[in-house]
Length: 247
Image 1 (cartoon, rainbow, N blue to C red):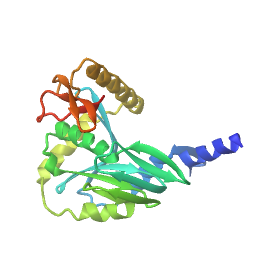
Image 2 (image 1 turned 180 degrees about the horizontal axis):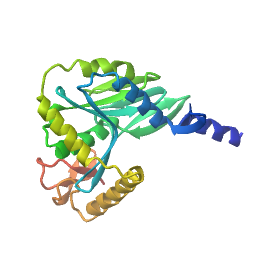
Image 3 (image 1 turned 90 degrees about the vertical axis):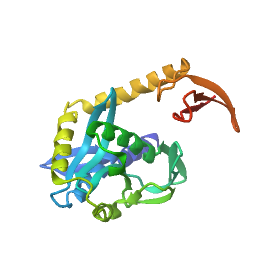
Image 4 (image 1 turned 60 degrees about the vertical axis):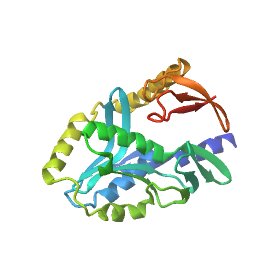
């Protein structure tokens, strides 16, 4: 029974591609990104599409599933390939997938996109108002999400992007932004492994800063405060910095 369970888990995590006489195993996440890439490829030629983008920003590594540069704005897409039912809200740290009666937590994709906005804003030197973050789920999931941010099914993605008609960038700016992104993208074959290492190291650095009462967001001083739900650490630079951590 254990062997059967492991086999089912592996099948649910991996998809199989047959190409040029070869069998290739890819993760569920990569399979979802391929499907979204196929949808995006149907956009007109004046939409510059980048898939699986890695950039470094002040020592922080960011991986963006899909990024589109167009006259109508920069679109940042976080792809999720889940089945079952997904529950989430705007500000929750985690969302939950329920599958066959079991619950599985994953990081709030809206918050993931917020970090991507910050990275692209700094890398391309553009206003956040010209960046449109999208969380897209493959059609095989049932969403139960209360959000003001854009969370779509994959079948809605093309029409949503096409609905943006206001010109935000002239054509020469689009070319400049595209060239800039091509320049700063990490091309190292080991970029995925380096990205994972960077995330782990940044998490360690963050905890060390908090332990030394240094705000990881603005480098201000952390002070202990009392709130409605107990004591917490807050940044001394509040309200300019709203970093908090429960004690």
